Image: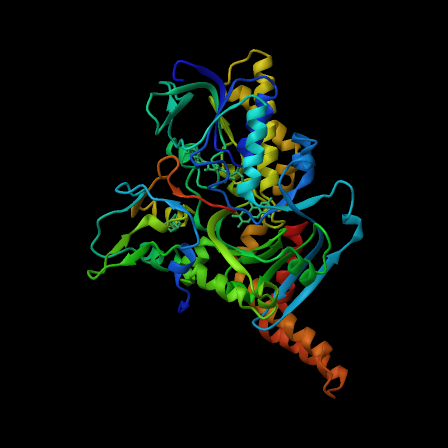
Length: 435
Length: 97
Ligand SMILES: Cc1cc2nc3c(=O)[nH]c(=O)nc-3n(C[C@H](O)[C@H](O)[C@H](O)COP(=O)(O)OP(=O)(O)OC[C@H]3O[C@@H](n4cnc5c(N)ncnc54)[C@H](O)[C@@H]3O)c2cc1C
Ligand code: SF4
């Protein structure tokens, strides 16, 4: 193995690494992919919603054999206080289309499937192999990797760092810094198993139709965070994530938070009788556009979560990972076909292509969102949700109070909690960040 | 702070691990009294791997670690801890993820 020289080494067999390895191998490049897990997916955690169109670009006929759980026909957005949720539900028969747009998946199974495609495309995939360090030449160019297997450096013309949010290699080589506690969320998640019919009945679904809930409010106890509940075929994924900096400041326990969310009166009946089969934890990049590090250098590029390419506002990550992996693969294949070396200058093609894609366009659009939500978390995640619940209750409860008084009470509660100026300025800043 | 009534052992029991006996992938630097972030790990680590010993120092037992990286983000830069991945194939093995 060490005698060989590869066109490219891909570190990691998650969404971004698989996309990159598949793209390069199917263009005839000699690709080695290294994954530290026992099998691809054994280290990876996601909600998980799969956005079809980004995978379709890579593997057009993926629906034929990919392990898809349910196609989504209903999305619920909930704002919770301790006893209630105020919701916006969107359900449409349009989503029962021949080629649905969003699916739930289970990462351990999905990643194995994706990896089979990568192998079939011609890449060599080696699991149970942790890359311990990048190998650099005297000029600082990446020339390969060191692993925890016997045998020295494995050489390649370029290394694709698809190492996920914790990306040790890139930080050890000083290509980027360890993410700041305010730029990552810690998410904890459980898998709740229930018979398929029970899930269908509880959510009003038939066949492989699916429903997902995103929830924000007092469930995060003032921290910037979101809860989610996604229906799989025979299980429900339930999780909650909040900024690491907020966990450290409030000293909330992540699993106590998850348990409280599970026992929220709006959630508990949906899970009743389930058997829990796994408890997982993972970080999510939340820093947005401003946290994106240097994306390429001499002999290397970085893709996916390792590059903080994650759109927390829309809860999109795997699609940005897949797209950045694909684009990096295309750029590398193009450079090779011109017989050019994998220098920083030439690899800047990857960044140029990424700039034109939705990945950097979307992240640029929301560049001010993280700072806004993260520094005003108590207003956005506790005060407003409580007020919203109060307003809704004032509206629906019929108790003989004249309507005009109810409306006044709602308005007064709003102003008392945040002051007129606070409300206006929050609204303006939110609008600006969303623009 | 939340008084936790949830037993973390029961949660971790559902998971699959291959522990690399005698080769912990996380180490805590020797200290007299823990820094605030190091102390926070005793609550914030989702697998409760960090605990305060009788002498008031923070210790780590990484057997139930889910390799999330929270402790790394909070305590690596300061040198409070040393964080690596387990050797290939070892550590947590998510069945679903
Ligand atoms: C709870 C949760 C819910 C989410 N929900 C959604 C969702 O619904 N939809 C969505 O689109 N996104 C979601 N995301 C985000 C999404 O999971 C990520 O954006 C995506 O997995 C990133 O892919 P990646 O390839 O960059 O990293 P990963 O999928 O993390 O892959 C990195 C891989 O590299 C391997 N690796 C790392 N270092 C080394 C090394 N040194 N040697 C060998 N191998 C190494 C790891 O083992 C891993 O397999 C969610 C994330 C979480 C945590
Ligand atoms: S990586 Fe996560 S689970 Fe492991 S010890 Fe650190 S905080 Fe705990």
